[in-house]
Image 1 (spheres, rainbow, N blue to C red):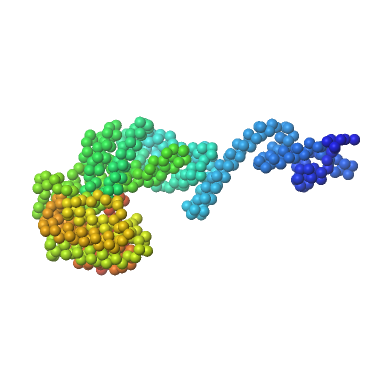
Image 2: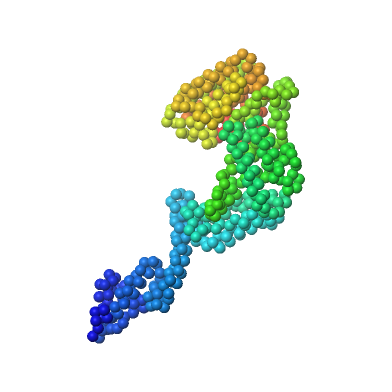
Length: 550
């Protein structure tokens, strides 16, 4: 006879005590997790009282995700529970990382960032181990750099490999997936190869951390100066860019002392070398590569310098050597029969703003005096367009890339304030301000009236503003209002050929003023667009300045 605590239990009693199904207990019994202690005469299974504890331990281990073979070994005391738990914890960690990667892929799909055809690549990237990730990057760098004799550049690339932490954030996983996709882009490899070839040509042999810190310092300096110029409304292809270029070159030259052939002062060769360096280094894909590496490795991400880089490269192309723009202005003015007197150009107030210099060109048959009447006509037509813009259309797009209707209206007002201020000897500096307020119609009307009052001032047309006569300021307003009036008309669906005879007469001036400017990102104008035969004068003017007529 056995006591109650020693009595063998039937499978039904075991199920009642543990709350587990009979079918599951029978299966676990068959695989050795809880073997029977005996059988009845009818061959029914009987279990020892400790089978209850064994089953409850097995169930707990199963809930933690352990496999049945490991559970059997632990329950049977063939393996230490601590050892099994440690192994399983490591396995769970791998599984968790995999699940997070899979979650990032699914999140990318639901957000629309990943197209169906990219799903296979994304899924493969999500499954890679740390060693496999590093191998992917090393292979990419080796193929991209190729045979270029640039050990320092290669070393710098391989010093930064994607090291996801044991518990990566969703941002880090997303960054790795994006980096993996970026490595598939041939344009990134081409940009990396150009940098390697640049480093080889300039004998940049070593990866020097001190040099890197100095480059970062100078980069921060020029980005700050360029950003300030951009915020002030100075275009990269305007005369206001020259002093910024000069300051950047002066700060950059000392960092190039180890580069053979670097001049010791600002000049055409120094600016050519800086432009070459920027054109190779300021690749947006290369910049994104390093940003993603920083996110993956938990390092601070440096702000993008893409916009500032576009501005500076354009400014360098426009100002290839010190004084080049001033010399060009003087040459254009000599075509009028009058060059600025010695010292006059430096003594007179500079014409600044977000457009290039006023220069020689052609006005209508009425001559300089008649240009004020032309300006009044164009401003009146633009004023009609401004008044036709309902408040609900302010967020509509315009032909000016990146500008909605409100931004375009603000610019129309600003241009009038800018040139009227120059004509009155009171240059404006509030480019970044809001010039519309709550009433865009009233704001434009007031600015246009100020413009006409300044231009009608006795003697203003013959007065010198820098190297240019006053009537050239009027011509600049005519150009701005005609072209941006075209933009506004197209944006709100109105006829765009506002004053055809003025648009026709302005074309020679526009070609001479803007024809030599670089039509690259960062400049004031996109490349010239094609126009159909018989296009209206304003359409031809807009297309010449980079607007798409379709």
